[in-house]
Amino acid sequence: MPQIQHHIALPSGTTGARRAVSIGTLAAEVSLACEIANGMAARVRQALECAVSDPELLTPEQRETCAAGYARHVIYSDPLGRFTILAIVWGEGQFSPSHAHDTWCAYAVYENPLQETIYAIEPQETKARQVCTKVRNPRYSCFAGAGLDQIHRLGNSGTMPAISIHVYGVARDRVGTHVNRILEIEDERGSVA
Image 1 (tube, helix red, strand yellow):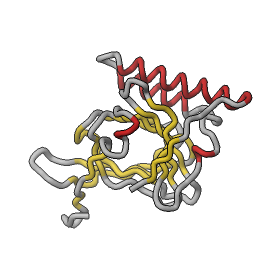
Image 2 (tube, helix red, strand yellow):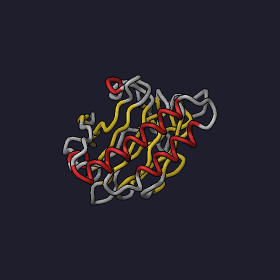
Image 3 (cartoon, rainbow, N blue to C red):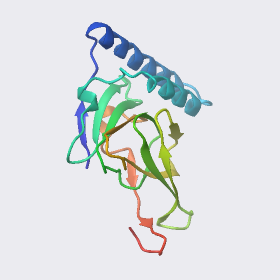
């Protein structure tokens, strides 16, 4: 289980003020997206793409890895509990389990490429099968609703730490328990992984 660390970016000097504006803008755009019926996905993705273009978005603490597994650093928590924004720092060889989502979610790659394996599951099946594996470069973004439409495994196959910014449609205290739905995966031979 990944370690969740709670760090809120506080303004200090020019970099800190700019960081606060970038995070504030991202949070405001996601908040607005939560209030519209159509176009939520596009608005959240656009906000993420803009945020990850800021090289000073994160504090040094929010860039720290964790040897035990990928580190999740909370960078914003909506006061109404509608969403939480995290920086996930992936050390060399660190991957999420294969999972779907119990809530809407979005992510954008911030620093260094990530590897994403995509899976699919038929309605009558209990195990997902691998569809493809893709490299996700910085500024790539995606959005998925709750359910089985996006089943994936994300991680760092490189040698340098990689960072992604994630937005989950849950309150901060539910990030560890109400986001990922771990699934059984069928490999190419029909075995369960």
